[in-house]
Image: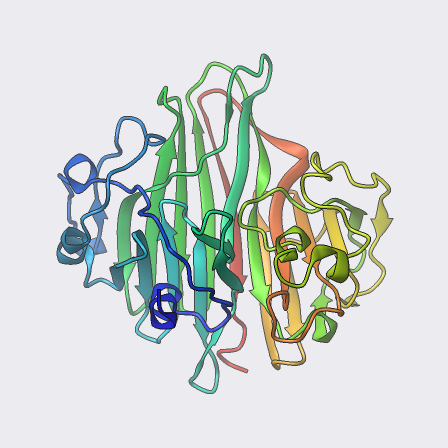
Length: 382
């Protein structure tokens, strides 16, 4: 595997690639999923039905078919390391890359006032335990669903299929992914929208079961920085928060994952691993944020239970800023690896999560719930 392959795969400069041998990822077979798409010229829309069971292993995707039928409206498909990479690109140059079937967004390059593009997400590619690729960071979905009473259902969606593509490259592009439970009673839609100055990630849940559905988890985003010490969170004054262990997520770039290189004991000596902190119970001691210009130089793992719907991160090292907001979620997670990490390194990032941890979200029978995160680039008119 060459360095060029990684660059083509993720379209990002914030990677620490390590050569590896990869195995093919199971994806959707076009003869099962893409056989009947319905183009709608007015909305530049492609749509096709879901497979009967979205959680079953998928056959390798036909990339030539995808290129022929769905490219040309700001969305292209690429095969790299046996995976499917979806790239969205607006006419102004802003781009997003996303992987299937995981739904992991690995890159968001936003247009700046000076005409150049800047990567806003932080993603790391390294070699896993069995020589397979280990991809962490970016924007990921990390949710668990259970029935509210008898607990007969416990489900965490991991395989997403492409369901719709629509939009116009001059304005915005929307890619809709979907999955559902084997009994077809819970439908999930993951709608990623790239606008001129925003990246929106929306989750839509339809509960057709006879029992309430309980959801816990988060939309987790890794935002790249020069260093946490040079970064400030603006607008959190008066918010209520408590400390919490590191989030459980295969995509979170956390101290546990540094053991092969820098070592979690060296970088974060007082923090346990994710498995040791399983449960996310935290200190249960609530504090009030007193600083409206909060420097993120300390090692932080905080869950805000009462916080503004949006706040801004300013990176004085890169002379850049980004705003992060939410709807539908009551809680917000904030993680900082602290100032002891090397600048512009694997751990030069801040993690923000739109979450439902201490207070699970309840979706009533026959009801629909929507939640969303947006990443806003305020630098176009700076």
